[in-house]
Image (cartoon, rainbow, N blue to C red; front, side, top):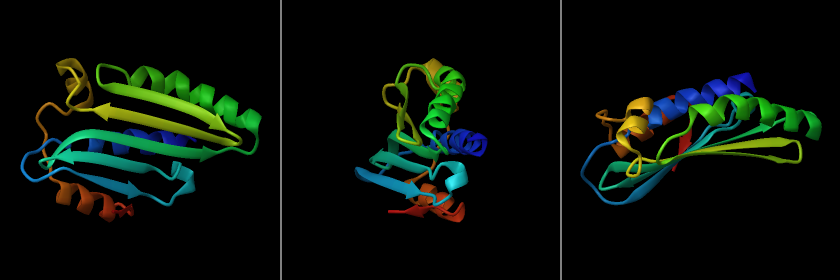
Length: 142
């Protein structure tokens, strides 16, 4: 679960720099087949080639439902305080032996403090650059 937490932090940090301009509305969904990292799936919504919303979902497997509950509590203690602010939502749930973490950031609704906190105030990239980045990191994108 520690590696999953690190992967979530790193991927959100990169995805959050996605603010650009030009083009039409589309989504980029990238998945990494890596159980140790929670098999992260990142979906970025672009409007006119500007990232307007992103969602990162990770599913971490535990050996029992009790371990999943304990893991969820530990992750919540850390992540629920890190992923807060206007336009940012953190959600976690236990489904059997799995802990599912979802962080959603609506860039258009984020206030200046949240944008500054996540480093999205003036960084830019395009849909194609984001896709190339994730594919170079081992993700499969569509």
